Image (cartoon, rainbow, N blue to C red; front, side):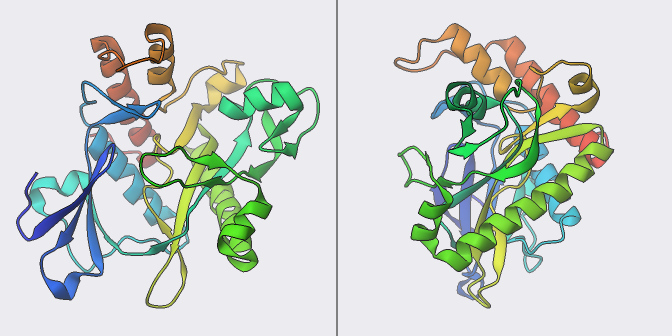
Length: 284
């Protein structure tokens, strides 16, 4: 992909990064969300129609509704031809910590809880069932490994070793604060925010703790329909779990994953669009 006025910096699993050619704008980065989808450390085929635009739409919507500094910049507009799936952001000095917050028990946390009664080493009450709400949201950080390596769950003490006690506490407190605020907003839209992950960095101009990356999208979060959850349906979600489930049923994990079925592509596209509509209240 070539974009006038920008040079390509980096290709991730699902996003492309560009920098302005103008040296006076070197503090900015253009992030372009593709329609690619990844699972189990593989980029899958085919792409999911509309995914990039819906993820960008949700991230921008959340930046507008979260009272916390973000890396989004108003200094430069995204090029018109990709404006629906691109955002211009400030470069941050990123912290190597994925700030995971869990409000409900599911996913890998459920597996650990069944074995030890804990999630990431945090002891929880006995008798919890899959999909139950936790007494309080918990902060379960992960070390953000270099490209090509797997992230690793770490303790809060290990987080302190990585970034220092002051920053570790700020990451934890900010993550829990944003999660609680976002959960309340999601509930008003008939949704449950079960868990999510944030990434933060320091603004090089003032050192301010700042939200980076995408935020509260179905690629970084687990959303459930609140009415279905209340009715006891705990295996529904708006995230990539349906893709993971399909792969688990159709692939043994060796070699390259199979091509996604037309049905799973269609369902995934519909779920991304539906979640964006539920959150923003706007159909597109």
